Image (cartoon, rainbow, N blue to C red):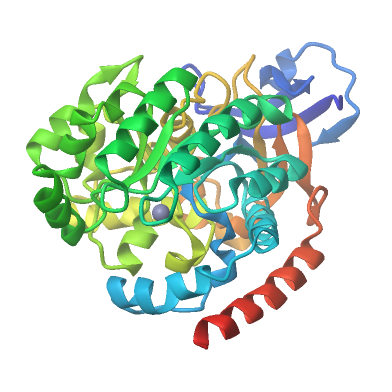
Length: 440
Ligand SMILES: [Zn+2]
């Protein structure tokens, strides 16, 4: 495997002891970080590849904790609509024509975009998960794909049986880069017996559950009517909090929900939240109480959701929005400071996915998921505060190199594992076909 030296760089490590190290060196061997610290103290190292420069900042890869990758096919297809007609008149008719290869290419394009933007790990929830997983494996990205369970589709027992065999098949694939999950879509699209079977399967297989919860006020009201309690309280009564539960959105919560979510399970909160600020804004869902979640020790990561409701797969945008939005809503300029938001976008995301022992910070022994950012740009001068610049001034286009598991996936403007030209052409043609069929 390639031995990589990043030196000299400014290392934004996210480690407790030395969060920022100037004139740093990072050594990568067999996919893992073997040294991070002052370049002057670095041990001798024979590198195959060296990147460095006083304008380069190295940071942990960004983590996208909730996505429907292949929805790149729907980017820009239907915007600025109310949720119900948006889903019923546009999204679902379009998706009803989806074929396996559409999802494969939609996922390829999404991965290309995320890698280019410095995202090294993402959680995914969509149709044709096996084919999507192949795209993830081929690209070299780290991912938590999931087998979806949707009660409104036929043969739910068959879906659950497939989820079980998928989780067994995919566990540890790609040298451990793939962590397969089970994704019951939500409480309003799955019945009690579906949920019970999913919780049993997840518990037996040790697979995390990904789901949507408390996204809109309408959803909370509907779940209250149907299940007699809020989404979080219902999930608790179903035993879904006894397995790792990654809940996307969590916008509308009451005091009892927050107490349940904050309970500790294996060093993490009982519910781990994928915060989707752009999607929540675009669909007018509301604003999740992120500061309150953090105060109570509830794990929070950032997420884009699908490109139908974003329309970018760009954690830089989510970080900047997170740092701004909650200040405005809480009328408090001190809430969610830059360093805290950077932590949510990296290590916090790793914690949400249960991967914090492996990735999320630049520390010796962790897998090498590293992003290099070029600070030699007008909008990143003068160098008062590197962390401030990463949150308030930097943008996805400033990323110059992306390393996952010790392998370059993107370097100097070039994708090394995804055929981007082909992915764009395939997605364009397939999206045209799907849009035409949906209009019929
Ligand atoms: Zn979603």
